Length: 336
Image (tube, rainbow, N blue to C red; front, side, top):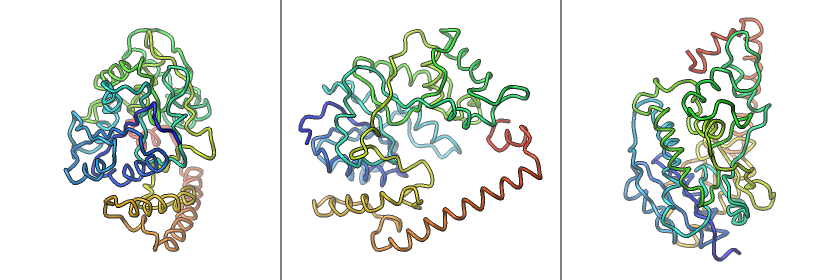
């Protein structure tokens, strides 16, 4: 067991994410009790903070931006705060800082993957096929339906304002990334850029080129900045015996389990049982996180899978007979 972790784990949480972040902490502490964890809390109550700080070496830092009830604002706020979460480690000694999504769990001791050998920014790069899929409704009429839309590239280049040609061909995910301390100033640069191009006070004013806010801001900077940090592929999922399992983004597993996530149900139950045996306070658990409800939870998961298959087939028939114009898709995905 790793006794002197070389990485700090940072996570962002608001009141809606207390339960999954609590489970993530359990999964990290179960395998590495000495792991230092920073929670950047968005308007958390004292009781919610205590659920986290009851664990040794877990600290809650209040975010600079409070919670907002404006529609669409919290998604942008949480993304803008990713740089701030990384910067909570600026005065610590550990050479590596990891920013993990709150809806993940560690299935083993992932310490060696949180502290790679070569200083860099470690993130997952999308394949060309993945970019084709996420941008399929955003291309202009007459433009090839492949890769990043030309208008996105143009907007990103103008907003960064440094290099003329992109340094990379695909986008980069902004969650579950690892940054070496020697590049920590990049966290401040990334946050400043997000504050420039994203608008959480009026989300409707944020350009469609940032409909995945932190991710596309990160991709834009890595493509067009003069001197971005070197990017290497994150290895958090390289070991089938000890990896970071992402149980999101939707549906939220603590509300509804899917067939894909069901293999992790017993792991989560084991962590909650362990917390109880250790004497840790446990948050009020919803129906989906109670072991006694497993039979019903499994049944609902399979029913949900069947429902999604039927819904997909109906949508395909609707597209076939009702048409699937770019304008129709633009309205659906908020592109208008």
